[in-house]
Amino acid sequence: MNVAQMKDRNNERIEILGDNHFSKNTETPLRADAFDKSDDEKIKNIQYHFEMIMKEMGLDLTDDSLSGTPYRVAKMYIKELFYGLNPANRPKLSTFENKYGYQKMLVEQNITIDSACEHHFLPIVGHAHVAYIPKDKVIGLSKINRLVDYYAHRPQVQERLVLQICNDLQKVLGTEDVIVAVSAKHLCVSSRGIKDKNSFTTTLEYGGCFADKTYRDEFLTIIGQQSV
Ligand SMILES: Nc1nc2c(ncn2[C@@H]2O[C@H](COP(=O)(O)OP(=O)(O)OP(=O)(O)O)[C@@H](O)[C@H]2O)c(=O)[nH]1
Ligand SMILES: [Zn+2]
Image (cartoon, rainbow, N blue to C red; front, side, top):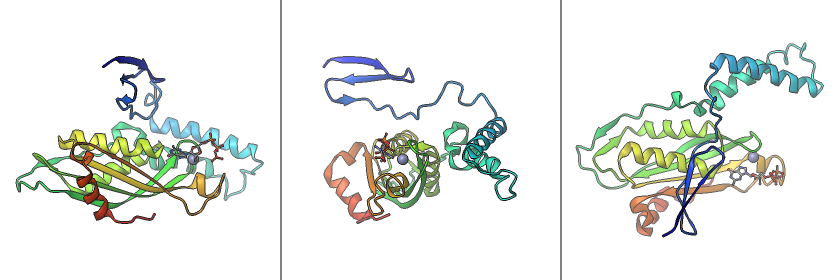
């Protein structure tokens, strides 16, 4: 098999194996100096720039309802909506020995997705469903929810979101047998542009035994017909 290598825009190596097998580049595109500044410095700078945006729109920032908005937005971006950009905020995912020898599927479903699309910075809202089949390690249930929340709180595309969650869990759990499904509504589709209020998007990533349709079907049956 021919193996060609290319550099992507982050200078990370992507291997192209043959015609259509790509090793996955799941990284969020970040600048090399992404975390050189403190959160407080970033909030101050974003506050300034957001004030400029509001002024450009003709808003009167001396109005007492508007005057605090630039700071509110800046703090919300860094500390709330996009806290998951900073690896320092990744939750600690302690694992335990699988002392029961549980070897069937564990499904954590209806995990809330509160994300934002990186194209318009508008909300992506929906649910994630995650399953794995333990080998030697198990993980506290809430840690799965926490990990989903962390990756969701970045400017995202839904395809990359499921890849990031799945890859991280596979590493932490020491098994390829992980599946992640996300169904979500994109406000950039429902509230602007095409303004389709009803459509939603589902993405799926999996490895190991979930490549087998039997396992995948069991998972899909458990999570059922999902709407968001
Ligand atoms: N693949 C993918 N696309 C997304 C996601 N979130 C938003 N988009 C799409 O990103 C595309 C951006 O397309 P552009 O044509 O550059 O932007 P636009 O002119 O605002 O597009 P319209 O929404 O069609 O008006 C749109 O089609 C969005 O629906 C996502 O998670 N994954
Ligand atoms: Zn969008």
